[in-house]
Length: 264
Image 1 (cartoon, rainbow, N blue to C red):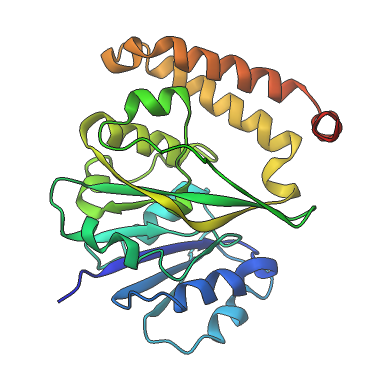
Image 2: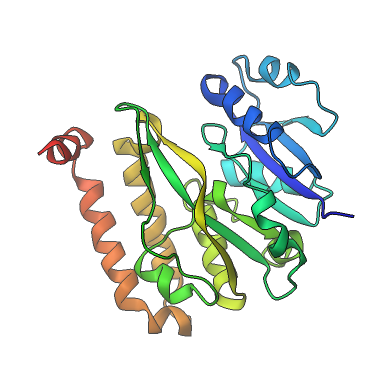
């Protein structure tokens, strides 16, 4: 019997893109999955869109109170029944072989988490760009990720028991909770990497705003200084410091200027 995969979709007022995300789950070639749909007290039509999908594998949960994104993810994870957890943001979408491409991973006890290449979809220009044309790192990837972080939450599949070791995600984080979790996993486990792009990550105004970039830097700064005594972090500190400086500079530049520079 094939492995049950629990797919976690957290939603808060995601009606604009939600239908495409849910359709991409339903179209998966790999069929042994359940969807944990966590509605973080949406006030739009997200629930109606969900209810239009008549699929017994779709499970709906309405939050008792609105919480941070990663607290909501944790609550959703705790409702799951699968051996593995996958995550899809409500504005992204998977390709039909996203899960079926991981069947070898599901059966390989040497690996506890997996990620894949993906496409960025730039909504404003209606263009796609692949994350990397170079080979993505696999196996022990902590040092590689310190230089170039390449894991998107929507590309990630992880053994539930591994995430449970860390009490899932840090609920105090709003933006880099998946980065924090992946770096913890990369310290102790090897990664199973799929080189083929298996999904699209949508880039739109809300996920690249000035406020978002400032919050990203603030959370990364706190994370950076929390790692000061970690031996593996110390051995890769220069790479992390370069990322620290880059994020700091980006946080200071208004978005309209970065958009202007890209055009030139």
